[in-house]
Image (cartoon, rainbow, N blue to C red; front, side, top):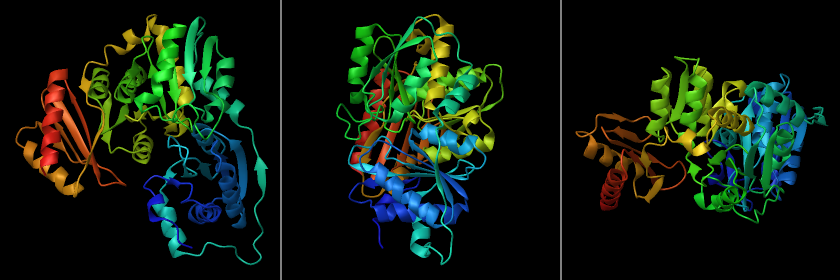
Length: 447
């Protein structure tokens, strides 16, 4: 049976619900066992309407191969991460989710026993090239259910060494995603007032997309933070593996600026430890690493790339502009709940408002990601490299090109799935940022 080519992505399998099917889910389950040799696979799923059926068919595919399944039910991706890495007999993991995508999407995140993500393209190759169906006489695997939230929270609170947060007030927008499974129980353990927004899991996303990187989705949260005079606002995506923060003034904090804050904190007392950051991230991260004598490791954009490097380098933290934060305490994977506790801990310790904590790190002006449709992605990037070769202090070709200048930098990289190139640019002033942004945009459009 043929499945749409475009759903098999570099990091996962994802597409619109009409591109997915129970048959695909079944084959994905089979392929995971064939690929990993796992005898026990942990499975979770999000709140989308199609997720329970897709999870059930994936479970049937897994058990048809003789492997057992531990079904943790509705879960966040960090909860699935924990269930995979914390229990030694769990040898692979499958999360049915489309993460931050709109309601018409769904998909599969797949992981090996060492918590490394499995590429959708790897699964596609196996499905195409081999029959992974049932063998005659094979005994089917068994399915058990497991509740992991309490053990997860025990671990998170212990590792974060959460302080007394009495007197603090936090507004949290769960975006009708899966964080409702975890956050009420977490805050029940803390002396911190939580004001919930859109906590009811609903895969139709009746209030806004569960994608906090889109600034328009933060509008309600910002208003609520101001109305409640809260210390902090927090927004999560659909599967709860990305988190964006809003200060007491209702201003959002860019994902890379928050990475700089976290890196600064985690390097204190741990000098010369690595920090992994993506090629489109702010100089703020670089500065925080240098100020603490850390080891700066730049990596290609992409969840899998950062996870792999965090694990390889035993980094103290890794992160992306897209507000994924990766920790050695979680096998190099995300835990938004751990991130929230670390940020609250820093805020409490500072004794001041969040805006003051952020201020020393938010000293550059960044364009935000700008997409350009081009006929030839590689040719466009090569042309930009030639244009700025004589002017730049340094040019990296790690991920597209990142050109460094005295007062500004830019990164231009190709989209993995679309005929687009993505520009991120930062400067020491608003005027310089706007000038260079417009200069590069005009050059790209002239190609």
